[in-house]
Length: 453
Image 1 (cartoon, rainbow, N blue to C red):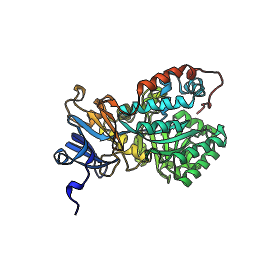
Image 2: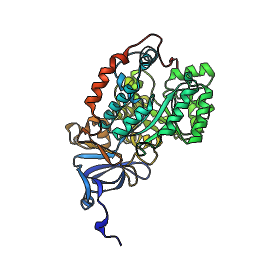
Image 3: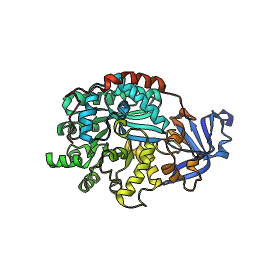
Image 4: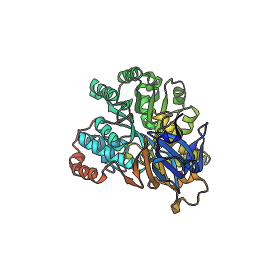
């Protein structure tokens, strides 16, 4: 028999907090005077503060006045685009892409991509995001930023058919080389840009490769109603039907945006044999005057919807807290139902459903034994969060990303009491600022692609 004192101490104990927990059916509840015990990269127990007081630990965090919850997950972004934050505002999406974003992206260097990704990682850590799904270029540099920051990420190298076979081959090469990197915190995907920039043959080959290698496919589709209308006019099929015909609904797929999903598409999604999910980024839709993701209809079809920000060039922030609040409010408005998409539902989308959407399943998204120790502490002591009549409503409608005090991924503290521990923001921001003149130059005719939906 092993003596009790032979058991090594826990690596981290957070005690005296309120804990957001999920029930057996996924329902959200709150446990007062709780403690979270972390051993290595996983949660060992969610217990009472009284019980945790007897557990020896390498580090203890006083969680009184704070709430422990799963880290938020950003299900679709382009992290290096923080370098273009605010560069093109108050214009239609066609002008935004063709006259500004894609010409400027022609000036991208690997170093700018890395600096943007590092700044983005810092922003997400400070905002309580512990994992994100990224879709961009020069992804080895993004992977380096993820590795050094301590975050978790699903990374995909974007490609267009205009690149020939090279783009698709580079996306596959990155996915196979980098999955499992950063001590398993990096997973990878194939990342065709969209059905209007990647042709049917490339989409079909992508489906074959995804099945062969067990890879997620991360793609923009049915981004807005105009895109769906243009697809119908061009080929007689909606973007979702294009994905089905290519075989992409028979593999694991993350569809970014989906605000142009039609009633007919819902039946198509229902019969798909793969793990299908949609990422919704409501702030950008409001800025571009689009419709929003039909979350209620997707829920009826059994499709999980994760929350996202898209890139900061369109969304201006990587603040999933903001996305969570807007999701709750916009869904009430579009459905004409104040009882739809409650605060608890919004929290579920930001945690459990987002984990499913980016392929992390039951590894993250909840505080439970055996899950990875990806969690945050939220300060609930401020005047704007008191009194606590309804903790879920307080989190969604009163609290903000600035209330996140501590961020932990795989049991490692990345931010403690609002102090970032893994990214030197002043140095990154200074070097990025030095490089902006060369980046933001626009030369007529230089762009990575044409946007016509």
